[in-house]
Image (cartoon, rainbow, N blue to C red; front, side, top):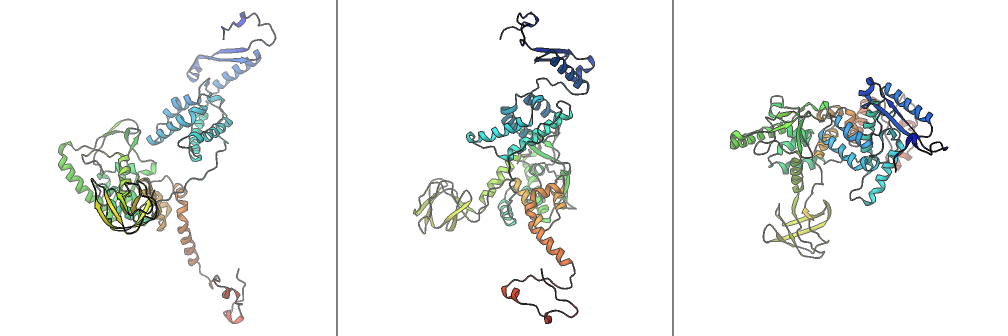
Length: 506
């Protein structure tokens, strides 16, 4: 494209040739609001159109509407909106950055914020779905809903700041989906896990999470000054979190997360036994015992002290280490050993690795924690290292691959956070009021608890129905017929107590 000639263009007098533009000087008192001294626009067919749009932009500025010019969606989200969200948890901030990088920038990132419309968002979400055919990890409708929720919040903030006149995220139809219901371990499975974890140095931490619903970060941040032994109560005031490679000490996730957690006698005893063990570790380390220093939510350094759960040298725990350790313990529950060499169906010997229990006996075969058959071991021959050769009473009923397991009632795979869900599930199943469960978990309201665990309230609802029915006095019981003979029996006058009429049962 050559240099624009402006008024010197020889073809300017030709009809339809050239476009109009405007340039308006921003009044000095409005420059801080606009961020520049001139408003510009071009590409107008007539001088009247250029003049009208220029005056309209200036009027918006005077009314408080920011002139955002060519500000793109990506620049707004990355440089303006996200840095201003100072109350976001580190994990939430990291997740939002990922949403912008992976799901917004490639599709609508370069679009001017002022030009964004709802159909642009709908088209972007459709393109994300279409790209799943080439993705190693497809993007599900739940992720799209989360991306949209974040974007809607960001655009609402832009409306409040008078950067755009309306929120283009309103009215966008999202892909249909149903959030996966929480399916935590049952009470007996939680017990099996805690029994397996009993000898671990973090056993008391897992009791806090599994029995009392304390969050992982809250358990890492729990301190001895917060434990009132005489009242058997633990005060939750902080949590240790990790964002990417950076750690921090923050208040609990919600305002109601700062709470008192009532403890049972067993958990209190576990904590006190843990303290004795920690005191011995501190004596071994000596003056070098130090919980460490972490930044708070404002970036100010906080000297940690009195932490309940630490590394053996006294430093605070990495929350991700706690999760990995929990999963290692959970995998051992009921486990005998793991197959180390593939074996075909019909084989009478198999090679296994470390044996956590004596191998002789009948075991269930598992693949990805799902039962696929049984085998009976009648003898074991040691091999080099930790491997061993198992001799079977009968030929293998199925092909076995490396990584298949032998065991009894193995636990299904769960996250550490699912121990917290198990606590909620057990409390609700035992009839604990949902408002109290919500308070113990540190939820912002019982409505949050109900939405998460509504499918776990069915037994409680049935129990409530029976309680209500039993509490209402009735002159006679309305028994539901249970057999054909009973339903075919016609009532007679002799069946009716004196003083009562014969009613039809409905």
